[in-house]
Image (cartoon, rainbow, N blue to C red):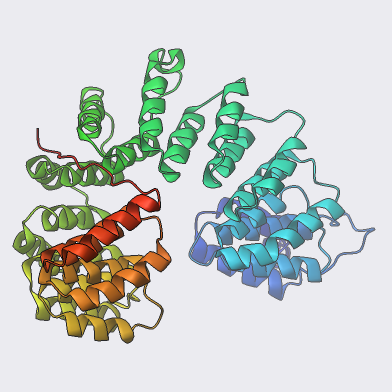
Length: 480
């Protein structure tokens, strides 16, 4: 073959297509091939009579897949628009990747492009392709449009386990656990994702006890006993999260049982599983167990450090929590918004006001973390615990948005501790406008007046709570 022929072949669409498909995991090389495709005009419209009629479609599909997997996934949408502009007809392999990208976008952007994508699918006569239908179910679940997800799912003639799992996730995300359970029971085949979707759905909807019970049911099922289905990382993280959030000593016992299963069966101990166990033991006051897991983890993510710092801060080890935060930064890890909730909480509990305010300032200035409502609530708690009620009130007035119940609740709690009856009454009334059926607000207001020995007003608030049909939730102790 002559040099001219070799050069011609090396820049042919067939050769570049094979090159693209082989370099799907190499982003730098994908960009280089993309440049060659543009300079050689291979992405421009082809004549219908040409034997390369579908070549541009295949090239665009490979480019979309390549950019989706790497650092510039937003380019998938841009390439798709170029594909349409250059009259390369999308096919059944084009849309799953594009819809997947749309589902991963921000909700506002996903909402804007989701319906037009579905319209394109219908126009191309591809609405009954199983992979496209499954992708659309995932997209509509992300947009909380469960009726649209159901409509697409019902058009699938023979749903496979993947499409059924997508529908389970959609129902769980939108709070319809009754329908999710009905679908689960009707599935002819279930895998670990099916079971985990139900467990995760219960947890997402704060049905923590049901999530744990369903995990127990899973572990007793014949598919698990015969090793056809094995719980994976997502399963363990979901159920451990429910154990952490469930009130009562039974949750700790169940969490320990799960931990024991992981050890006995030599399940690979991942960063997220370790983090979930640290959060569980920290929430229930078992700091020694939490520290043992933390120290034994070779690889730790930011979430792992966050869980350990928070566990220390919430169990009277504020100084250790702050020391661990400094160690985290020395390891080269960048704190996120969860980290700052933990460290400002530690400062609040130990009344390190100046240090806590410094952390709040450094969020944006040093780490580019935008303070959210929860961070403002932590600062109000920091000032309130130190008795700086006037400063806390002024801080709330300077907030860039209206305070929610967590922020005002922190100030009300400080009013109770420091006997600020007048301010407490004002804040309490604002809270009751936001949470008219929250028993704790009535009780706190009553206690503020009782602390000032204004017994008539204290009784009035208790009476108002009773007349509103609100009962005080009984307390419990984790110590046994």
